[in-house]
Image (tube, rainbow, N blue to C red):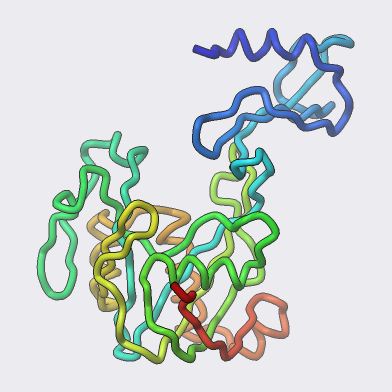
Length: 258
């Protein structure tokens, strides 16, 4: 096992340079731990050219090792006002055995455990591909995870990022929501190893937040809060556009050809 001691020993072969960032350990999926050389760092260690201060945090990385800088979450709103959500498997959440899994979906009580041991009720979203724009990334995740039909829609995007775990993970998260014109979606998709898709009323979403079933920060609560903030109209949309906070546009969603 690569211990903290091993990691610090590896720093002795690296020259400290202000602002230099380099990985010290990489996981088998898409995470790597990086060291950021900084004179205001909270830790100190011995480098090849002396003892210096540094920061240490996590980055998401693509298969080629490049940094994944941004992620996105999108709230799909059906013409009847229901909202599409997906059931993901999140083993990290599954470590908390006291978490709530009894959800209100479609007027019924549904135990999410029947879909898998680590089930999490979330909105579509994920990491952006390298060189992928925010708009295209959000729509790609939406289509991949719900397999909605090709249709016209109105897309609201937040232009300001949030840093969901800003002290330890270097990623910007962008939220959006979309008013769909079509009602059709697949209840089971093949994306991400297989996802179940469900439609909930706004009341059911709120009930599931209050009872602890919907609890994922980046994949549920952040995009949901953006949707509520804008749709409730505390500030006119024209003002939010003028502030540079949101963008609204009519779009056409097209399913990729098979």
